[in-house]
Image (cartoon, rainbow over the protein chains, first blue to last red):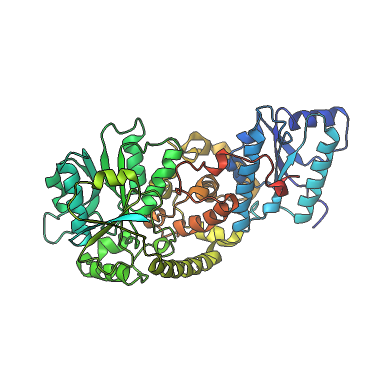
Length: 141
Length: 374
């Protein structure tokens, strides 16, 4: 893939952990690749599969869903539901062979600014390798 | 060991007799079953639909075992009981997948099972609407019953019916034995599965005995159905696996949402796809056009199907209504059964198997699915 491809990643970040981690990473002036568009949600379990699928069909190269570590959810058990829903959604994409690897779930807690940087950079590299979303230029969707 | 009750009449006639007895003796206050409406003129065709009747005379035209599903009775029962449980008992005769649909709806707090006598049958499948409307059913029906007796697959049925492996009802109180029953024309055999069922059958004229359901012919039938199912799945794979195939298959979609509207599991009163979320302003179109150089109109039809697949395929009971109502013949139900099966395997879940089994997305284990996490 040519090097001038800049991945466009949509990140749904939970308000209590990963969004705070993103804040921390920014304050700590970590070197994060400018590929992610952050959407803050109150809990990762609030993310309807439609939002993720919609992001893909309207041209996102990758989608990151991130929240608190299991057991640390601000609402006690939200992220356990997220994990089930995410697994199920990924299974559907797998069955239809629709690049399930463009979808990623990550647990990043509020104090893990460095981990946030690592997750974003690694995911960006992965998407860069996979190339742009084949749906992007497709007017049939 | 379950109890068997035999009535010395053909299966359908015996069942109607039982329903009449239930109404006349006051054990139930109403019966919901398929009823045949004769056409007013000879050139027209009769219709078959679900009716809720309270007088036994109205059962004269009842055809409880007619192989047609004019609507999913699961959603009809949900309409009846969504606000509160029934105060007085009714008996309903429905197909196994319709019971499963209703059980799924009850799990979603869209209905109540109280005061309901569920009568079902081992199911040989139902006709496609196309066949029922356009062909001479009086000529076709004997073929259907012959196929049911001889455990054959029959090609005028819904494709998902021929590939259905849940033809035995899971939670019925009374099961009428149809599939593989050679004595269909002579006697009505009913298996009493629950105490509730026994309560209603007491006092009815007939022979009661104890016998286990003969599983052997059913096993043979199951194997046949499984083979057909695998064939169906491998045929559908060519149409849905991979982005190009998917766009091609759903490219026909009109966006009428008929599949979702008839689906018993799609119960949301305001569907996200019919809400303002999916109405776009001219500026959205302008942005998209400047970015992509073109856009499908109406947009989001593929998203609709993918969204529905992720929202409810793990609960899809495979009744086949969605394919039957599709005006452009997209094999919706086969796709949903195919994708749903994988999702159901993930959670070891069979939709409608047990009303106490929780919906997979409303429960969790603390340690599971570690492979999806980063």
